[in-house]
Figure 1 (cartoon, rainbow, N blue to C red):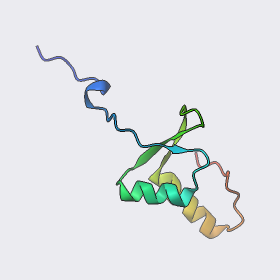
Figure 2 (figure 1 turned 90 degrees about the vertical axis):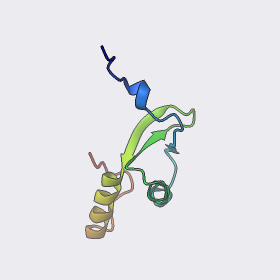
Figure 3 (figure 1 turned 120 degrees about the vertical axis):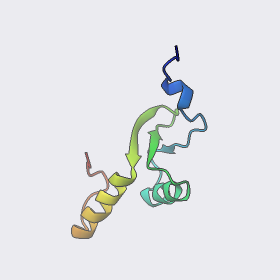
Length: 77
């Protein structure tokens, strides 16, 4: 019988993450350069606090184009 694969069997271990304070334009450049769809966001201690997706960045770009006064902490969820 074949054992089912686990997340650990196929996960990437060379993690690429950004810190909370990383400017979004830098995050977008890194994601595009590395062809990433999602990137973990970590705090100053390296703990996971969330993640950003290319879709999040695209929505934010569109929202800001429609409303240039949109604050930086706008919730995209």
